Length: 236
Image (cartoon, rainbow, N blue to C red; front, side):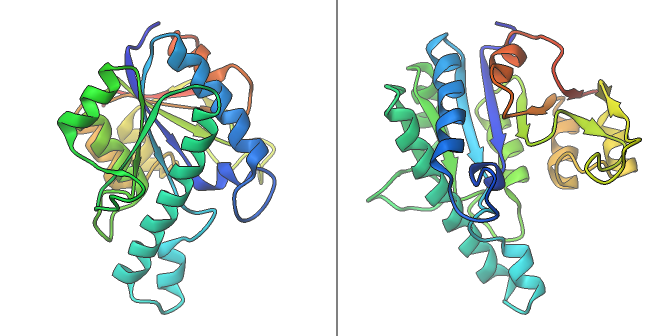
């Protein structure tokens, strides 16, 4: 494979499948099979999963809830998603560990960088939950932070679209897809790959981000092998 260790960033909405809310077992099952397949091939995998299918802190804050409180609730939503993905993976005989940014010792391990690296070396999929453990930071920022801490070679941003476009392809029929784009272009054009903090961290640490369609069967394996799938964000 082109990569030996990567972090997959998955939106919470992807776990909802065709639903607008909650967790769709069929969607998680499909994702789980893809993950188990590449993990069995030797690719070391860390995951960061959003919580937007259950609770979105920024949306609640906009409606009057205190921002820090809303963000903590969003972090708890990511733990629920992490446990659901863990269940799906372990049903496929894929060993996992859920590690949370704040202590929830009855259901998960605390995130300790050296321990997480050891799990990866042993072939376990590490699911990093509860964001960074701090309010005002998104799971995009958590994904970039964990990828750097765990010495991942790239972030795989698995989404519902097949790459990065100059405008929303769901709204504009003439939207143009990028095969590759620089971090600076993403920030300047506000292309919405990840939030600006996450993109800036990735740029400063030369950490490439590959954006691709999660729901096309075999895409994770193709990206791991270095095939041209989706859009790669790197350089500048």
